[in-house]
Image (cartoon, rainbow, N blue to C red):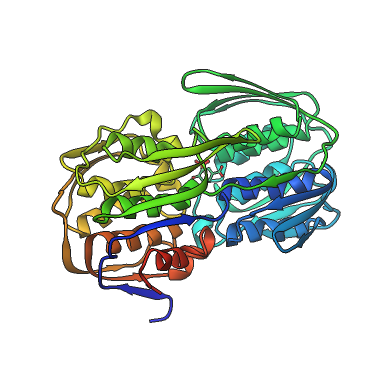
Length: 441
Ligand code: S3P
């Protein structure tokens, strides 16, 4: 069947060096910030996936030009008041929560009503979390209950806010930080720890920002400004895309993998900390700093002695997009793994906690669930022989790729639907699997 893949055999052992495409979070932030700068922004290694292409299309609809060159994109920003919002506009954020939420932050000074819609999956997600703080700035927002479509019209009388971000959502924090840029005065944010790419970009662009780090929260102050200049940025590899191959190498006999030029920002490497607590022995080499981010090469070897983990919940936010793939390692580890407070997983492109539990049960792993907590009974001898069909996952790219890795690591006969879902974040996923030795599409 079209748009479906079959995998009937595990991958053979491999020893390879690969590179993954640019980080999705940073790609979207660079496009949006480039659209607000004065003058040209040059972005190298921009991730060319649907979420990022939709970001480019949205700024274009708002009157900002961009051009693709051989190895970079140029964005011709017109400043913080440069969006052309004189008429009603409809923006399509596709599947991307990051795009929809962050661009709302940039529309708090729009002159006319702007409508943002998304695909089926995005339309089911919670936007109240971002509508509430943006209304406090003075913007007018209407929505379909708590989700998309959302209509926003800005205000000429924006006022800075005091905002407490309690979910550990970098999207909410960043949307408020973007709105703060356009708002005279100082916006104060107390944010539960989450990825900090927006903060690092602000520092790098000399946008006035103060950050005080405490154990579980960051206190951030952003001062509204009148303009900032275009910039140049080379986007490092996405650790979330690496995670699939890290786990494949870890679970495949006699395999070794080097992944070059990956962003190992401490707010993103929860997966490495968690897997290393499970005895994975993953290493970083060639560490260097780039505009506040830290980049390194990652080395992973196959490990036979993986053990269960009582996962500290303070690692949840830095591994938020990686839990599905981490569950596969827990399935093969010796002993019990416990994961707590994973409610936010059900707020993603699909209800990932429910889907992860069902996937593990489907492959015969004992899983106990109590509300937002799960216990996985690992089986170091896990080898599959049955037939498995994976469908109805709201075309969630990470569910699709996790299922492929389960098939390639554990065996069995798999049919996995919606292969197009990889276009959201990782269009070259199959190419890299092929480089590791297996053709699957
Ligand atoms: C992202 C933040 C996270 C993450 C998403 C990307 C970002 O979402 O799951 O894939 O770029 O800020 P939340 O902020 O909703 O946790």
